[in-house]
Image 1 (tube, rainbow over the protein chains, first blue to last red):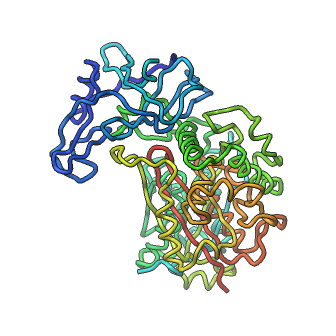
Image 2: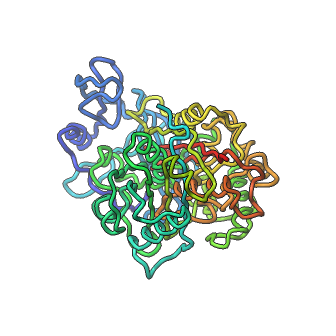
Image 3: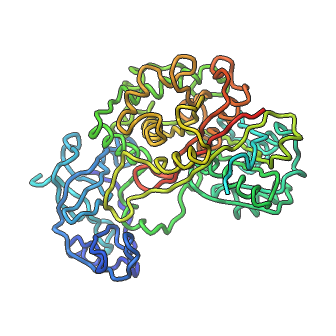
Length: 132
Length: 385
């Protein structure tokens, strides 16, 4: 696990529900009541159709790696940056936490693991190989 | 309205420095401006339009116009990351076509080796969701390369050929930061930075800058310089856009490129020389596919075996050594892409890399973060008699 210092996310009016849920271990995303498509990161207005009828849904917190690159140099290296495609559809940019970063591969099943940031601030949604 | 022949590049100047501890960034802007204006045979009194991006010191064009001593009737601080200056050529042509200016000056300068420079402004809507990830361009472009390899079987050897070709050109550039010819093995044996990109898959970081002077046709005809016309232009942006349909193997150049070719009325097969933004080797490969020099997925085969080397390959690219070997001032390679294309079209490139009868060239670039949010700009340039 990387020892990178993680900046605390700053919730705002559009995103505080997401971060409250993160503090309770739930990964929420938004779905549009008009076009019925989900999106991440969450917005007040649907990026797919422009509707304001977006609402929160709980995800299963699982998905698969779309692509992954391990940073080998600099502060906190090595650590893995990846896109994970959630089972609900949207891909999200995140980190993969694993003992063996070299084993990470496209298509691998992963599940969310909320990682602490600063005291009193919400944790952030990273992923780890299922069963790993 | 078409931009075809709406404007001409009359002046182009690349600052020779790659390390400038004893100069200021505004000073570099001014030296580049003076160089490009002298190249065109014009003076600051002739300039009536000024273009810079948001990295320029101070309060956008207001500070720089005053510092440079200009009096203008048109300013533009369009921002598209590193490819901005390719886009500025097109925007200058738009302004000229609309009668808003006749002599547009575009400047870029920066000293990332000599001072801390601010690359990103806080407050982006994605900030809370991505700031903690530690995403840099290395992993961003690395993820694109990993996905391209997964889908199409592209190899690290093939990517390395892009660096090898750039180094073959850089050996003839006395100002190149990395003038030494390298081999595929050299690239693969250099330290891994972010899988699968090695150190030699990455561009250089340099202090420096460049400037361009874009003028109205009637001005161009009065100058004792080759007539380098803007024949077509395109621009586009791309991002995850909510996360559905993510495809890291395709860039915004898949829209900017075809738009530019359509406006120019030419095809990739007509291009004699290509300036392809080369922040990383993978950046080049994906753009070559997106512009239509080869089919999607065929980029690895296209770049292998020296196909990008001037004199031996089918598509001479970045004959100054590009960002991979020569210069990437202020983390922004767009202006040097246009400058080398102008050199080639004028017949002023180094004789060892000059493309014979080079009358049609493309300059294309990516700005921002290819694996996250980025822009693309493409121009088709033509030498006219």
